[in-house]
Image 1 (spheres, one colour):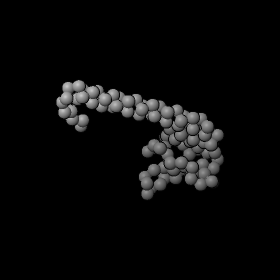
Image 2 (cartoon, helix red, strand yellow; image 1 turned 120 degrees about the vertical axis):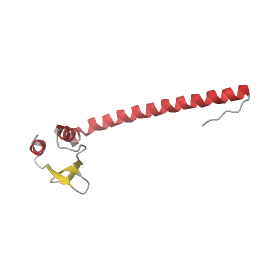
Image 3 (cartoon, rainbow, N blue to C red; image 1 turned 180 degrees about the horizontal axis):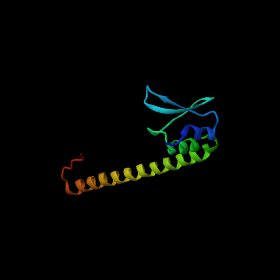
Image 4 (cartoon, rainbow, N blue to C red; image 1 turned 135 degrees about the vertical axis):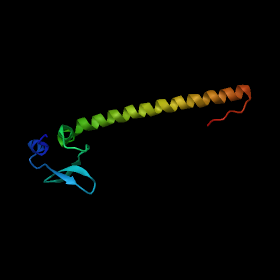
Length: 105
């Protein structure tokens, strides 16, 4: 397969991989201690990409990306809420004008 641990060491000589049997996952550690949990079940190129993306020198870019995702999620949630409020308003308007009982759920 890929020599992931060697390639991680090219990024940071202190990196080493540990298989945590208790949690059934791979973890990357360094001389400074725990660095991150490998977000994939196997050690492959995605772990290298994750390591590069989460390094401290890339923190600003990562935080910007997180902020963008949060804004998109917020906009989506607000749009869903607006849609639900419109449906409720339409039902109430219909009930008011027809004097019929309307079930909401």
